[in-house]
Image (cartoon, rainbow, N blue to C red):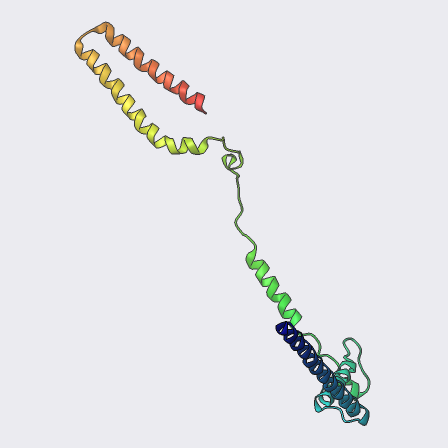
Length: 183
């Protein structure tokens, strides 16, 4: 039990010490506030406040000064406050006019190409990409047809010559029909 009583006594001492430190800090704060009040009542304001007040008064005086824009003052004292006449506006207008004349497009479009105005089909890019390959295949096909005709002619069969020519013409027609269906 002695340990418990010592702990209770220690806690009481700590509470008294903390209370005494808080009280002493409060007393110091009150003393500082009273000292500041005495200085203000006595008229001895800090130097920083004097400088701030002087700067504020100068700003007020500068703001109260009038500036005449369209009024022609009669007295020479007021003539100092008159703004100078604007002189640069004419130079700016002339410069803008020069830039506008330089920017005018002198080229005239005589005709408008209808292909540029007409919308394209959905697969136009695919046809464009495949067109080179199709040209190669078309040439190979024509060569193969010509070779077949030559072979039949060389074999000496006249009836076959007629059928070979007809088959070549028919192949060309089918190719033309196939191309027209794609468009």
